[in-house]
Amino acid sequence: MTWLEAHGDNVLTCDTCGDPCEDADCRPERNAGDLNCVRCLPCSLCARCSVHIGIGKVCLECITEAEAAGLTVPKHRRWKLLGDLHEERFMRYP
Image (tube, rainbow, N blue to C red; front, side):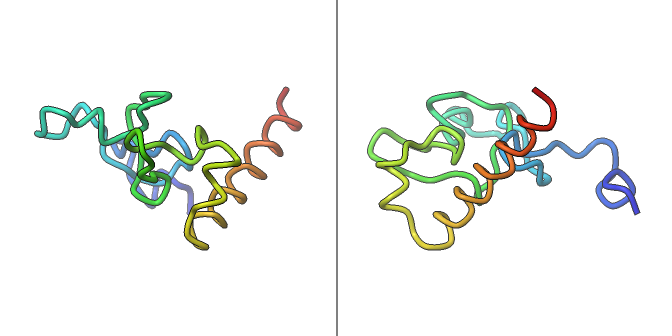
């Protein structure tokens, strides 16, 4: 089964991990974009890839190593795995 067969072709995905996710522009809240990463301003960011730090919500791609040290164990594991995945993609498709 392909991803499209499982999720449909009109499903938006998280800009960080690729999981199905709602687009910030489609949310009814006035500050919906602020619920995503305040650093890279993605269109879609799932809750699993979002963390709240002092300045607001930040995605696991934009978080620094120093900030990652304060993450919960599951969020830190996801941050590490996403970093490994992005590194592998970059090495495969430079």
